[in-house]
Image 1 (cartoon, rainbow, N blue to C red):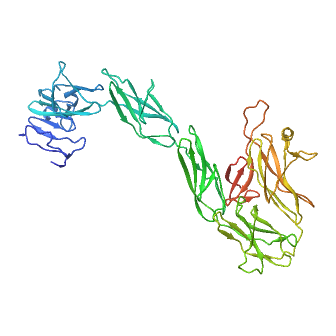
Image 2 (image 1 turned 90 degrees about the horizontal axis):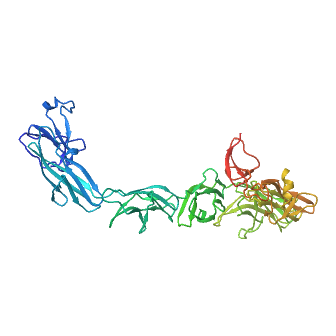
Image 3 (image 1 turned 180 degrees about the vertical axis):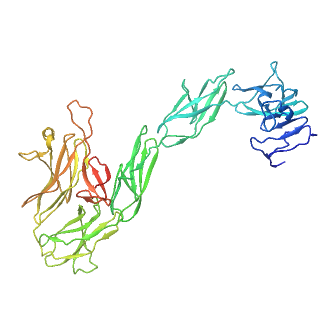
Length: 584
C-alpha cells in the first residue's frame, strides 16, 4: 500500500493489523495510525512508538485529555534498562506496562537481525553477544487485553569513539579524543589513526599531529583498543591554517608602464621558502612589486605567491590596469653646435628605464633608421642628451617608450636647428630616499650635462641638528675640510650609491651634485632617518624611528612637489609604506 495520508479508519471487527500493513506510506512524525480495536484504541507506528488511547468515557474520569482522549506511551515501559555494552554485549528487559484493565502478556522476543528467539535470564534480562561496530534490530511480541502488538527497536554495539579539533596551526593539529567505557571493559589505548600510524592520546585525551603542510585538508580517524578489537571512527575533514597571502588594495600604484604593489602573508609555525609576484608571465622576487616595461592602458592579473619549506603554495591575485600614456615633445635646447638637450613631458613613472629619444636628419630618407638613445625621467619630465650633431643640418626628434616585449610608443616629431645654441647649466635632481636601514641608505640622483663638461658627480650628506655630534663618531666617509659634509662619488645620468657606516636612529640630509669648470650645481635636499635608536654599548634592542614623508604622488604614479588639494594623493614614507590621503 503506497500513498500519502493522515489517518486510517479500521472497522471494529478487525482484531489485528500486520506490522507491514502501512509500509511505504508517507507518514511524518506526529501522524499516527488510529485503529478501532475492541473496546479501546491502539496506535501502532513502525518507528517503534506505541500509544494506547483511552475511550472517551474513561478519559472523562482523567485530568489529561488530547482530542477527548488520554494518551499513554508504552515505549519506555515495554522495553527498559537498555544497555549497549562496549564489550560486544547488548542487554535489555521487557516489562509489563501495568496499564489498568488491560493485562499484558509477553509472547516472545526475537533478534530480527538473525531471527533468533531470545530467552531471559533469572533477572528477566535479555542478553546477546554481538559483533562490535554493528547495529541489531529486535522485536517484542505481546498482547494488551485481546490485542496483539509488536514493538520494534534497534541497539548498537558500536562504541561512540570520537574526536574533535581543539586547536591548530599551519603545520599541526590538536584534537581531543573520547572513548566510552563501562563495567565490562575500558579501552587500553585510544587516540588518532593517521598515515598508517597510531597516535595515542595523553592522560587528558589530547593528541597533537605535527609535520603537516599549511592549508591542507587531512582525513583522520579516532580509534580505541578494547581487548583485541580496535574500533575506528572517521572524523570530519580537518584542515591546517593557511598563509593568508593578500595584496594591499589601498596602496598599489600604477603608471602607463609600471605597477607597484605590496604583498603580505601570515607565517606562524611554517617556514617561508619563497615569496614573489608574477605579472605578465614575469617573476618579481620579494613582497614589494615594481613591475616595469608594461603595456599602457592594459589590464593585468597580478599574483602574489608564498611558498613554504613544508611544500605548500598559496597566492592572492588582483586585476590592475595601467593608465594611458601621455607624451608631449618639448622644444630641444641646443647647448653647443653639436649637442642638444631633448625633453618631453610624460606621465610615465620615474622607475621606467625603457624610455628615450629617436632622432634623424630632417631630410634623411625614410628607409634610413633613426638614431636611438635612452634617457631618464624626473618629476614628469623625460630628458636626454644628444651629441655629435652637425651644425649644418636640421634634425627631427621624438620621445619613445619600449615595452619589455619590444613594442614601441611614440610622441610626435619636432624639428630643431643645433646651430641655434645657448649656454645651459647642468640639470641635477635628488630622488626621495626610501631604502634605509640602521647603518645604510641607498640614494638616487639625476644628472644631465649642460654646455660645460662634467668633471665630477655624486652625493653629499650630513647629519642634522642634535645628531651632528654622535654621527661624527661612526662616519668614515670622505669629509670635506672644515665641515660635517661627507661625499660619495657616482656615475651615470641616473646615479645611485649606498651610504654606509651611518649612525642608527639619526636624521641625515642628502643632495646630488655635479661639478664643471664653471662650478658645482646641486639637486634637491632630501632627508631620511636611519632605523633604531643607539642608547649605549650594551644596548641589545633598538626602536625603529618614526617614518617620515619622502614624497607625494598622484594616482598615475607621477611625483608631485606638494600634495594636491581636494584630490587623492599617495604619500610615501621612509619605511617603504604608502597611504592614500586627501588634503584640504
